[in-house]
Amino acid sequence: MDIIVCVKQSYDVQQLKFDPKTGEPMLAGAPRKMSDMDRRALEEALRIKEKVGGTVKTVSVGPPETRDVVKEIYAMGADEAFVVTDMKLDKADSDLTAKIIVEAIKKIGNFDLILAGAASTDGYSWQIPAKVAALLDLPFFPNAISLSVNGELVAECDLGEAIYKYKAPLPSVVSVSLEINEPRIPTLSAILKASRKQFTDFYIKDLGIDIVTELEVRKVTMPKVERKNMVVEATDPSKMEDEIKKILDELRKENIL
Amino acid sequence: MEVMVYSENEKLFKELVTAAVQLNASKITSAVIGSKEDAEKAAKYTDKAFFVDSSQLGEYKPKEYAEALHSIVKASDPQVLLIGGTHKGNALAAILSVKLGEPSVTEVSELKVTEEGLIVLRSAFGGVAVAEVRVGRKLFTKVASPKIACVKPGFFTPAEESKNGEVEKINVDVKSSIEVLEVKKKEAGVGLEDADVVVVAGRGVRKKEDLSLIEELAKILGGVVGVTRPLSADLHWAPTWVGMSGIPIKPKLYVGIGVSGQIQHVAGIRNSKIIMVVNNDPKAPIFEHADYGVIGDLYQVVPKLIEMLKS
Ligand SMILES: Cc1cc2nc3c(=O)[nH]c(=O)nc-3n(C[C@H](O)[C@H](O)[C@H](O)COP(=O)(O)OP(=O)(O)OC[C@H]3O[C@@H](n4cnc5c(N)ncnc54)[C@H](O)[C@@H]3O)c2cc1C
Ligand SMILES: Nc1ncnc2c1ncn2[C@@H]1O[C@H](COP(=O)(O)O)[C@@H](O)[C@H]1O
Image (tube, rainbow over all chains, first blue to last red; front, top):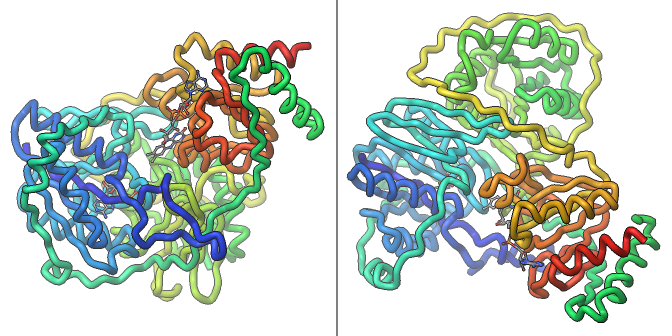
């Protein structure tokens, strides 16, 4: 079973800072991390490999900072990592990213299954895995919460109002939900070994793709809601009632109670 | 300008019709994958309803349904295609986007059409921010190649019946190698979307039985109980969760109990009028988003709160 996993190095959105003057995100040097659902996709691939054998390869597309994710990919246990990087790819939209992933996959070679996250932590477009599937004319199953392969694929997908259980031939493309598994934490020795492993860097021009985007982000702003931030400490049992009362009094003043 | 709308969700379908009206569409059409009756219903809201008989397709399958929708789009000439931004809709939009060679944008909350094309607001950086995005460089020149936008639920008022459009059946010949083994419907939620008061339990609540404490508080406040994603999706204590990827809420009062305040949760509660929280970790990010915060153990604070509210 040869599996290719799409792994994005996302911005760590929880830590993103905004310029207080312009309200724009400060992206230069902002911390990044492996996209949360992609970590589950990689974990799921590794578990399948542990059961039925085969290989797990990854493809990551993005700006040069994307290379940092490779160490973690290897530390978790992937066989081979491929990256496609270019400065301009920080602004890539889902069409461009999907095209690049597909061209990279064609170079990587044969596969039985493509796994991805259902939505990336920063882009959150829910588009790329389905576009990869469409470009390759393969079946697609979104937001899987369980997966098994045995010559064919059985996936349970959380589609909102119901869970759909699909049976499909391979190869197929599956995107996974946050809850599909609990990803492993790499051991220290695995991390040390990982930093010495080589990976393949594809260049955009070798893939024969022009960097053009159809979506143009014109402005990004932080929706700022002013909050009162009144905080009381209710850890001391003897003072708890007085402290809580302060807040209930405020709520009464606001006609909430 | 023709705007076509599609959603498998009836309420969201009506919201899309309102969005299309606000775009000043001269013609609003609807795509339906369902029965003739479904199409007749849709035609009460749109100038024309095109439908593919879903009995030909069976239960929802992304690739096959996208092919059906593609046939419908080709039969009409929309410049904009609005799709309900559900899991099903997002997947259809992506596949259709590839088939049509036109861009798609998801998580949309507002949209307008100018000389420059379709401009939308969508969430950015995983719900932290809002981005203004122009969809497509090519303006509306090509025929039958709409720009695709997936609109989030809850941002437009559902439209009322106002039309008596015609209905046209589109025949498709879709072959499939995929089997739907089972469709497990989820139980209905408690109406979090429209509640005035929502008390949300987070992972600080240790056992399912302890939810009764949260329920008691919600009852006194005249509200309903919601949970964070791990309590629903991992532990299955409730059918749905509050937040960006679950149900976004806008109550008069939000009370978060043992909720840490990760951005994906906060993105879905930002429109609450008042936010009150109880958490034993003074460094929990939720305090930054709160009007009123109580630092303390929920197992002491909540019973006290209930007692004080009762008297
Ligand atoms: C793409 C994506 C989408 C997501 N969408 C959503 C979403 O829509 N909604 C959502 O909720 N999450 C979502 N999440 C998950 C989110 O990132 C967090 O993991 C989740 O919100 C955390 O839930 P929590 O606050 O209940 O748990 P935790 O983060 O574990 O927080 C528990 C809190 O309880 C406090 N606590 C512990 N014991 C006590 C006590 N005795 N008394 C008082 N306080 C106590 C702790 O200090 C802590 O702050 C999403 C994640 C991703 C990656
Ligand atoms: N730049 C990228 N490189 C590799 N995989 C990606 C990239 N962007 C998105 N993906 C994959 O597509 C999934 C969904 O992303 P998105 O469509 O941005 O929400 C992610 O979870 C990844 O698995």
